[in-house]
Amino acid sequence: MVKVDRYVYAVGKHLPKSHREDIKKEIRSTIEDIIEERADGETPTEQQIDEILLELGEPREFACKYRKDANYLIGPGLFDTYKLVLKICLILAAIGIFSLITNKTPELSESYNYFGFIFRLLVEIVNQGIHVFGLVTISFFLIQWFGNARGKDFLKKKMNSAWHPSKLEAIPKSHVQIKYSGLITTIIISVLTLVVFNFFAEKIGIYYNRAGDQDSGFLQILSLDRLADYMIFWNIEIMLVMVISLYVLIGKRYTLFTVVAESLLSIAVIVLLLIMVQDTTLINNSAISEAISSTDISGDVGTFIRNLWRTALAIIIVFMAVNLFGRGKAILKFLK
Amino acid sequence: MTELENTIDKLNQELRRGTIVISVLSQLKEMQYGYSLVQSLNANGLRLEQNTLYPLLRRLESQNLLESHWGVDGSRPRRYYRLSADGFQALEILTKEWNEMVVVMNGFINPKEGDV
Image 1 (cartoon, chains in turn green, blue):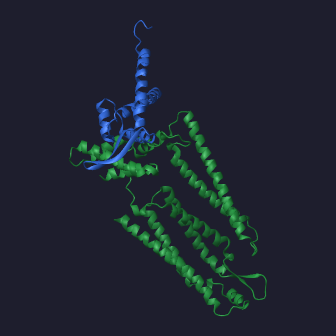
Image 2: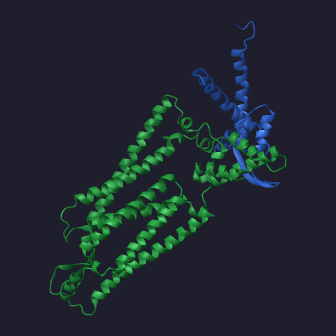
Image 3: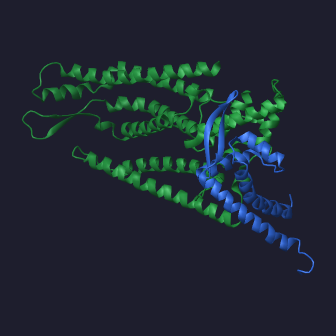
């Protein structure tokens, strides 16, 4: 009966979400009806189950019949490819915009209008997003349209004629099923972190009022030279995190390999953060004392700033550790 | 499959498509679940693949020609279908069309002597 579960799951993967559970339930009850009749009350043999599933046909083909009669711009035979191409193009476009805009931003001065910059970035992203979406959609629509005119059946071409129930994939464990929002958030945070620390590291700091001065002062908290030593590792780690997230997003599922790889990367990130917390040379000590002497503020502000930095890192470490714990549980379930 | 066989296969599918709808509607004056419907269609000589029937039932339901509900009969839940008021009306009209079509088609395919 494992095969029946896998079959129903495989059909469900390609069904429209709105009716998925209901249709899955109906397919399962039908398969059980057929089994009951064929096996005559006995436990069905593997061969009998294979025969029944073969009669029902390849899961994707079965699922597509639920969509086949709809009017569409892009039919079920092309739709999966369309979604994949669209995703890749949108992500590439986003990365492209980030690098273009950050390169185009000359002399970052203290008076630089950051709100304007972020606003332009957002407008550009929405703009390009619509362009990419439109272009990809129109391309696929044309492929479909000319294909239809020539009587081409995209669905048939994609179907594997040599399909057999033994090829059914195992059902992913529910707790390691993929969460799109989480993966997309990870990718966005990764891109932002890369951009901020590679291009705007000198802007991370505190803006304050100088005593007897109209202009506000700026205190750069981090020592850029020291930060550069860490950036090599950060860039490699974040790139790998992005590659794995994209891989899971495209493959639509976690495997033992991806969960282990993610966990190892999390450990690497935590180790790096722990080293940074303890690294006193990473803090721009001379700038801090200089800034403090130019203000009226009394008290141990230097220690306060150092603690602020450490607390921020500690929060990230705790967050990563909780995340890692979840991954550990997922690995255990995979191994069971 | 040769090109001719391919073409014939496609034409055959198109020919069957309409008749399947009438057959299914005609069997759903009484409440039935999917598998019992397949069996009653088979018993009447219409071989219909399961993976064609279930999507068709959903489509007819979304067109308001069928009504359905989940019911538990025996050991497992089953989805039961029957004609809606619209479905009865559609079946009546389609049946009338079909009967007229049979006469017309017979006139083409099996012309009586003297007609020609």
